[in-house]
Amino acid sequence: MTAPLIAFSIPLLDTALAVIRRLLRGQPICGADRRHIHHLLLDRGLTPRRVALLPLRRLRRRRRFRAHSQRGSAPVFGPGHRHLLRERLDRHTALG
Image 1 (cartoon, rainbow, N blue to C red):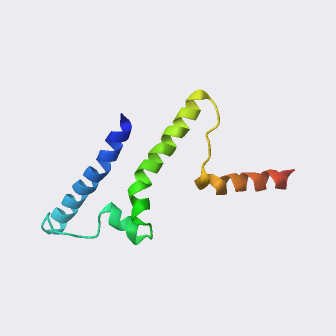
Image 2: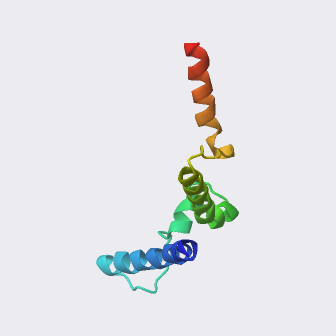
Image 3: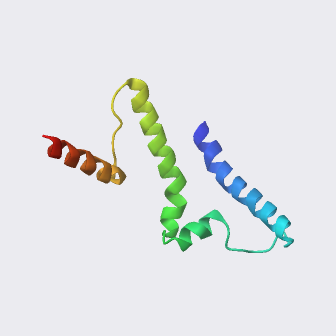
């Protein structure tokens, strides 16, 4: 139930912020600009595919972590967590 709410809240929040930003600057609210979330992420070098999938990936990661923490088991780390695992392994081998 929360996944659809989060998925729909991101574009609504982005639109609301664009309207407020334009009203404060005295610009027409229907005018175009590059200050939307997806434009800012594209300008940072993300591909259009990654920008579109970013909210879904974060939501999936949160749900997976929550499911494991409720069961009392350790969360499953994905490819994005390799650096954390590497640091932990390096510290462990340095101590031993």
